[in-house]
Amino acid sequence: MVIYTCPYCGVELKSENGAYYCCFCEMSITTEDAQENGERKQIPFLLSNVTSSDAEENTIQLMQRSTNDLILMLRLVRQKRANFYNYLRVLNKANEEQSDYQEHAAISGKDYEYWTRKAWVLENILRDRTGVFPEKITDDYLLSLSRRADKINGKSMKIRAKKQTIKDTQG
Image (cartoon, rainbow, N blue to C red):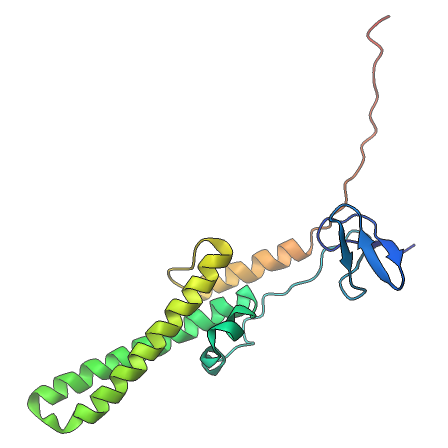
């Protein structure tokens, strides 16, 4: 028998006019969010669902993105920023010998500033949510997040009642 449960606490939901209500959380739960038999809502950690162009959204739009997306975007943005920093360094060095590259250096400088500020935006949104942001986002770090998400997705929210036997100590 299927019992619909809250995706947050695992309590059996009460049905109200085609929707659900959780008495423990004191909130309505949509039909889409209702879970079955105390299972957790499945939230996969997808490693390939964002691009660096997604990071060009404004801050309000970025704030609507999932934390997973923001972590992946931050990695891509940091790489873009590093690339522009390296371009700028090369162009500045070339300008020391010939001043033919000043316009390109100015453009690269603006791009570097843009991607630096985007990195700060992403870091601060993550910091608002979790109190921290990842210093370094490696393949191993992302793999560990993916594995942790899979492990958490597999844990149910059921409290198993053990048989309790109370021994009479009075005689």
